[in-house]
Length: 44
Picture 1 (spheres, rainbow, N blue to C red):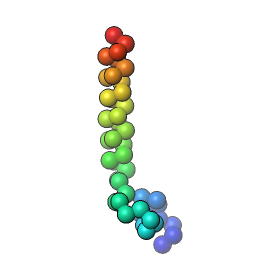
Picture 2: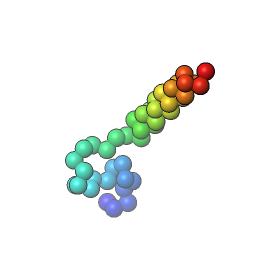
Picture 3: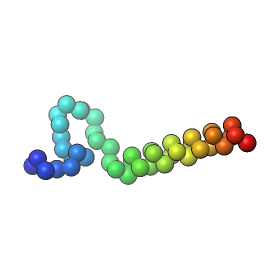
């Protein structure tokens, strides 16, 4: 079972659950949108 991707591999060191890929993508999109809104607000 050593050929599992990092999302499914249980290290035993990290006790927090690994976030799914869609959650990371959603968080990244929200962060980019917020940063873009701040940049636009300060630019114009």
